[in-house]
Image (cartoon, rainbow, N blue to C red; front, side, top):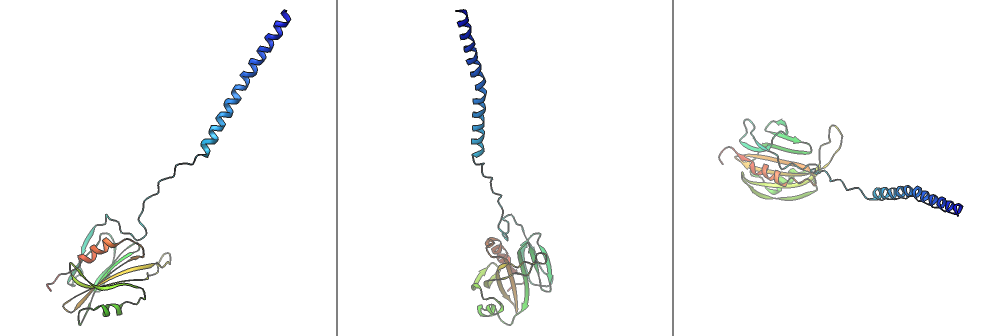
Length: 201
């Protein structure tokens, strides 16, 4: 009887030991499964960095008045743009955008035909007479290749917006250009609306 009880006790002890030994293995397997499931879950997508397309002039741009000594006009241009002085005006450049203002003698006010003849582009988008704060102007919008970048050598397709104002035997030619696709409608309107002759018509 005692031998039998001893055998049973050993069997029970062995079974208990076996259960205890298997418990950690089950726990490890479960932890591994959870880790694999978490690894398979897609990581949250990063938020894209907001930036203006190439050529867009920021909404925060400040405009300042420009006057050429000896010329009877004034126009506002973005503050901080690089300036190149010209005999009767100036060019202003920032990245891919350019503003150019010049005057020239004129025997008569410009017409749509005369302005069209000044543009050497087969890709004219708009041609007509418009009213701006500084008076009426002939406006032409066309596309043309930009000047070659002196550093990269690249040439981009520009959309050019040109205004020709007239007063007292002189044309004022205001040319605004930037890459095709840039959203510069508001800045270009600010510049073209700011032009005015500084002598009374």
